Length: 348
Image 1 (cartoon, one colour):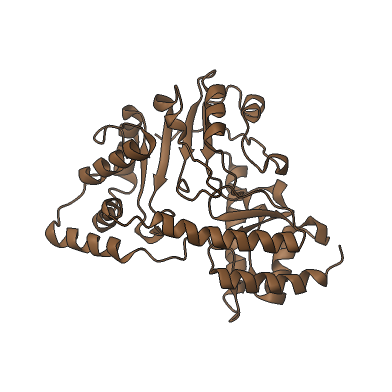
Image 2: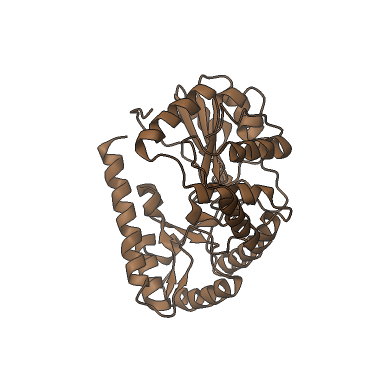
């Protein structure tokens, strides 16, 4: 990673913290900027974790609890038809040049096979976030098959970040890239419990992939941080064992918020990418005659509504804002009422 990339990342982080500091002084704040779920981890998960801790207080290996890895493997077999060895395939640092693969509003920011062919030919690794943060773009099941067909023609390894895999709208089908023909052994899948089960604070994620890669990551993690806290792992295991799956309930809540937000943006004639999945909308505010950073500051100052400017995600997104679904539907309604009054005062 180049020093220039690091500096841009630090600047983006600094920008977000400055806005959060400004927002903290407002009693009427409505935050449409947060990235962690505002819903509560289910009581069944908490209770299950406590019972497991009370019964067994053993330590965890760096690779994670065997029974948790087995439960993750069962979930992937049952829901995705993918078989992983929980002992060898679930859990080096190397330099490289980062190359962006641009996407656009014309395709709702969904990565296309021709984008990979044009911009990532010869790449060692392709990092795919699906559904996407910040755009909300979803590469659906058919799109994943098309991407796999393109990638099979190269030696590219795919790191597929699927942390929002259970948050997919309008009946669309999500498909793990590893489940596509020829991709099982050349895809590293990243996922976790933070978004799916509203368990951000537990900090439990996992990797699935080639056994030699997982072993290398295990060795690195042993020196960097050691194992994930035992209680957090038991909570994750409890989430997988619950008879009542909280995912459909959470999805229904997010779907209602998404519909309210899309209606608000449509009423204000603000263009945005179709959010096929995830927890964010990506909107273009350029018609108001100012860049997104200025727009977000003015919006926060005048209305108490917080959202983050797109420049946090790269210089080319100076006209875009990321809007989060992580606020109650009633607050989203109020936020857009405030925005309506604000934007009418701006010259187009």
